Length: 104
Image (tube, helix red, strand yellow):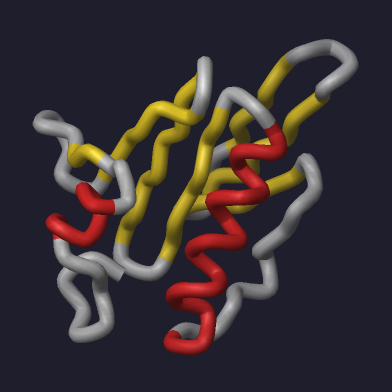
């Protein structure tokens, strides 16, 4: 997404309330009410992390509306509690309040 002909500019993200990390240019963050959200982008993978589920769903809908027509949706794209990002398998156990990361 970043750097492609269809990618949003840094200014576009700032207008949408996103700030770019000074440490990693592929990481963006913004405040969401009393919480926050983090957007990680790497080539054709993206990961949205938010303090509230409804914020994450809203952000994902915003990005889908703005960019989904320009890109194929990955088969591992999910709204559930199991996610794949950069070959990592991320499993969320809400009852135990844990996240497990498995790497190849």
